[in-house]
Length: 225
Image 1 (spheres, rainbow, N blue to C red):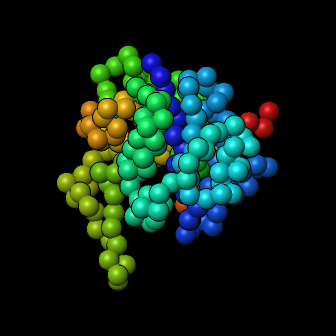
Image 2 (cartoon, rainbow, N blue to C red):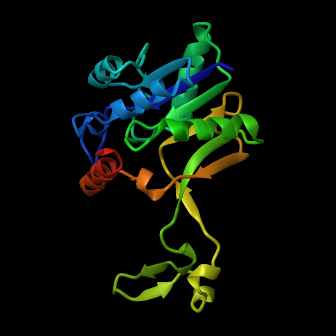
Image 3 (tube, rainbow, N blue to C red):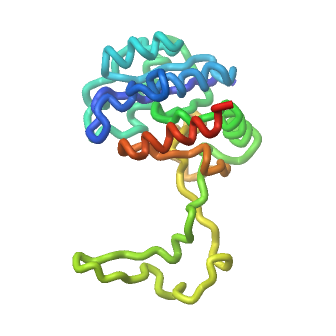
């Protein structure tokens, strides 16, 4: 089956300026996603979708293809990931390249591994799902979550679990935010989604400079020798 990796990396970033190409331990952070896709051996094409010339140049340097620039509609703050992916698929179809399976790899996922890419792919093709993603366990039971009002008053969101033991509560998970395998016809619109668990050491959401430092520390912990 023909497979495409799509790395969406627009130029605008409000919280961390130039986030997608910011230096991460010696090279642009997007390079880790590109290199993982290429070294996995899974893809017939690794493509970056961007509206930014500098991102395009860096992406090409690390081996990705950037055959066109993203439309203005899909480059603003309200762009939907699904529309970005569809734009790439339509472009490929227009030039005679047809893919059955796609993988959206986020550009700020330096802890991504080829092993996990393979796990996701095999779960997709061997299972019953239309899309597959890695997930991470919440560190604390979300059933015991708290909220605070503007006076600092605390309350439980689920007071029925006030006396519940943590070990008696169902384990819950959140998206690891690294990649999403999908069958092209469904293109992330199907509710038939599968997932597999990755260790928290291989996950770090990166929205702030503190998150960035934590990701660097985790990377060094994993790969320092």
